[in-house]
Image 1 (cartoon, helix red, strand yellow):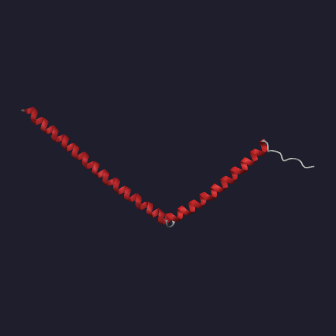
Image 2 (cartoon, helix red, strand yellow):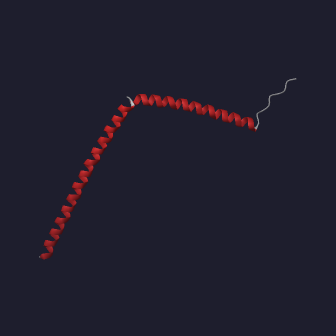
Image 3 (cartoon, rainbow, N blue to C red):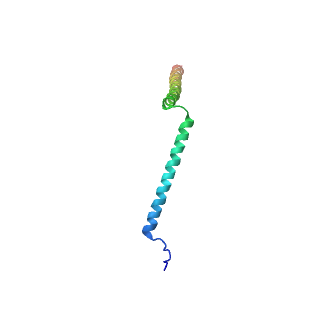
Length: 96
């Protein structure tokens, strides 16, 4: 005589859930690897070319930072000169 199918219990459901999670993890790893490959291909060139491109970008940023630093120094010098002139004008007014 045939026995009716049983509904899985706690341990069986745990193994099914772990198996499902493991399968999803493998699928995500394959999709992530494919995406990484496509992204790396799109970025163009070998590692040396990409490294050179990043170095050029960093050099450009460094040049802009240096330019801004020079401007800040000029502004500080101008501010000091203005303060000196204000003190000179203030000293001249106190003498009269």
